Length: 244
Image (cartoon, rainbow, N blue to C red; front, side, top):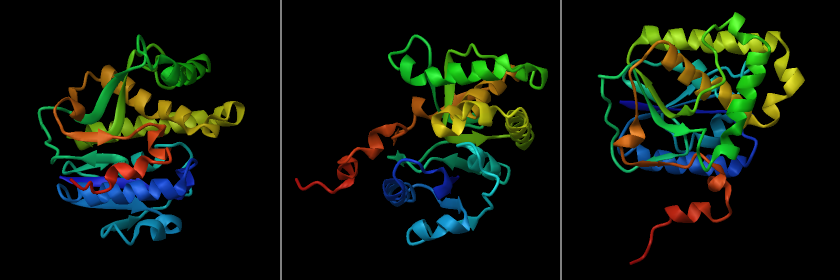
């Protein structure tokens, strides 16, 4: 199983230097367990080419929302390849179960959770889409989910199912652009809002088509630094070798 990383400096709005450091550390650790391929653009290649030995160049001029690049790359992947975030660190090799239609990082609560205020953007952004009648285009769209899939890891078993989801994702994206909702609400001012278009929407898709799915975090050994902790001043010290 190959791990597929995606990166473009266009989507980095916090600390480019720290993000690059983390990607390199993740590669250093995860390449012990899996082959790794990086998809990036010409403008970003130089930042990681001293570490990643398998790099594929992809056009990113059409990238707008945070996970656009991931899903553009996902079209090209086969069942022996999975998307992996650059801030995810394995302690053991990941095991795929082909009993599932798709596997992902984890399923987390956005309701009845101590993190409700942090994840409230899912509810706010999905409500905007519903209020603007996205259901006329995507009938199964709702804004009442209590749990949402995290796609720090993402694998599809069946190409037809994968492509059906991706077709819906880009239909949603084009609908948002056509209705000028990005101009009106400026979702990309804070990119976490646009994760609603990917993680939240994937959860809706899984529910609608009654797909059998499973989170890796339930039985795999890894850490995903998905929050802002990775930008704290002393974060990289945890990767330094300790003297006993």
